[in-house]
Image: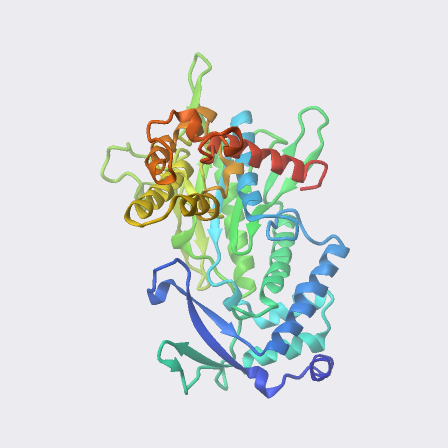
Amino acid sequence: MKLSLALRRGVGLDRWSRGLSVMLEKKFGVRLVSKLRAILLMEADFNAGNKVVYGERMLDNARKYKLMPEEIFSEKNRMADDGALAKTLFYDVVRQLRVPAAIASVDASNCYDRVAHAMASLIFQSFGVADTAVTSMLETIQEMKFFLRTAFGDSQNFAGSTIHIKTQGLCQGNGASPAGWCVISITILRAHGKKGHGAKFMAPISHIRSRLSAILFVDDTDLIHINMEREEQLVETHEAIQSSVENWSRLLIATGGTLKPAKCFYHLISFDWKPDGSWKYADNSSCVDEDDEDYGSEEYQEWPLFVTLPDGSEEAIAHLEPNKSSITLGVYTCPSGVCDGKRKDSLAYIKEKVKDFVGSVKTGSLRRRQLWTSVDCKLWPSINYGLCASLAELATLSEVLIKEYGKLCPAGGICSKANREIRQLDSGFYGAGFPHLGVEAAVAQINKLLMHYGCQS
């Protein structure tokens, strides 16, 4: 009853304005303050009300009126690796067409904590939230008293707003934050698309056209550019992706956010041709030779890209060559599709995970049954994510973990000299039962095909 009255009258209860901040590890075992995430514990009824008003009703309005764009992969019935798969398919299209293209991975800094309340209020109301409900939540955040919990107990003092400066943001831990950032992203995407930015696709036979402005999962954004409607030169592609990044930066700044240049990078993709018709990816990352000591420096970049910061200044971001893999959405991808485990790519990441697991088994004292339970419930869930986006060949996937499986065989009660086929054969066929990466990757890709076949995704 009190919650309903507060939301209808646009007021917040006094006890709602007391929050307890706890610091959680982003990465297991890393306790550096700069690597911790502050989560605000709010009053249960206040948080539950926010989840209903914003997490359910506001997003239902967006779905009802078909305002949820296909660029957002944090939406219901989608997964994070769908975004990684979309990037892989984009690289495949570029490789097939062999035309200039670009992709810029731009990461927003503290997305939930930098939202400007004035802009958030307008956006929330445009998606059907009552102005009194918006006022109730935002004013509560502005008056919030942030207490801190550590190993020594809860603090007696608190941080909060001053008379002249009010606390902004949606707060990590607020039930309204994911949905709130989602509709803000929708608004930014619609404005970005109206400027003409993004990839323009066209079917070669039917000439059906479609556009995709970006690939988003919460605050991780990949801005893409390719134009299948007309031929472009590399200089035009570079100008287009620079304009897209600048426009995205300014739209983000308008909502209170900003990009983090240290976490941003881009690929400018083009091709070099030989008289016999063969081709290779052009290295556009520098205008000096790779052996030169100035290779890769900002001064000698041939095609630099800049992001705009809130103070109006610009900062260059890293330019990666087509064969260099980068991790986004938890998956290593690169434009060339090279994935052999010999460099820092998804297979190298999997091998490192399995090596760590083998080391733990050797130094531990697991019984046979415990080992197989650990393989199924700990090892495999840690390495199977992102296999749907893998471009490695079947032979490479079949061989990459053979040696590591051989080291695990004795601990599992299997002869270490068992042949390779036995190690990766399913236990239902009287094999050892270690996961076969090639088969599992094929299964993951088929599952994605079944999931999205016939859907507008």
